[in-house]
Image (cartoon, rainbow, N blue to C red):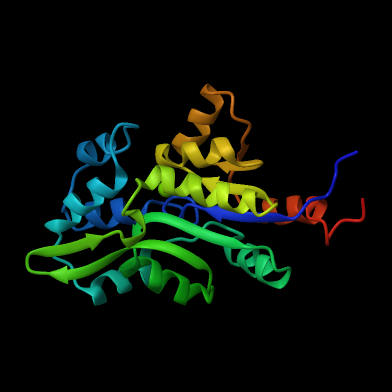
Length: 219
Ligand SMILES: [Mg+2]
């Protein structure tokens, strides 16, 4: 018999909550990067935060253009809004840890009417491009930071469900109690023997929590 537990959720943003990586999509759409450069950024050896700073430093985009791009072109993964509301209703901690930036995350959450604890790069329109800083990465890199959010919730006595799609999500996935992965992360988990379910729709995780979260199941 499975023991019910108190759960929490941690998620990546780009390519996980959204169907496509918003940063890559923006850079490609406006011609500030190319497919080869972006593909190379997914090596396990590349720090996403360094790639983002470099790639956006020459991206001449305004806040308004980015917000409009999000409203018209960025697709949310099915079930995301319902999942965020489900967590809110049942007091299940849910946080988003991302190497993406506030300039596109803000308009995205606003459009979907979702408010969730989150960590994003801070982006400011500067001369000739966009300047990004990561205040939460002073002592660590993105991949370890994501893992630290999972460990922190586990230390607080919770089991953690993690959602991700990229190589920088691997450390966090290895520590989580339940993983939903898509894309490169799904392949990496399989190669390394980390159990992961395919992330297609966040409603799968609602069903999972209904069956496993202590205040929701009767087992
Ligand atoms: Mg991602």
